[in-house]
Image 1 (cartoon, rainbow, N blue to C red):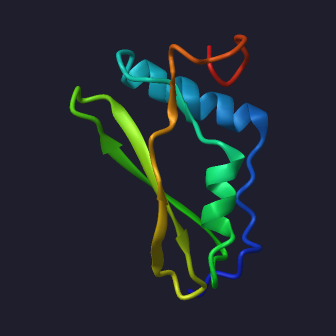
Image 2 (image 1 turned 90 degrees about the vertical axis):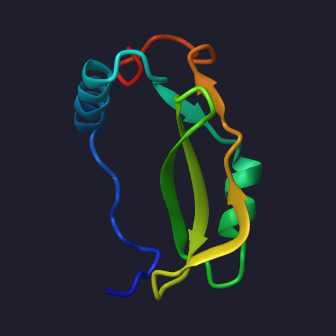
Length: 102
């Protein structure tokens, strides 16, 4: 399957809320989320041939969940030019409680 950049990856807030709660119930000691700046996301998306972003799960030295990401070409290959990580973890940086983070 070739990627086009127009795949519909959107879900409802209700679905996302359920998925997030399921994760928190299974892994209560893990972080809830990671913030990435639009600057970094745009650098990844603005690479030649990039049609989207692929996120990879990882673990930091303390065993806490982290995410790395890279741009992806239409042929499904990762673009290993600008790779993201170093996001800001929630907690402690979660903002106000809402259906996705509480």
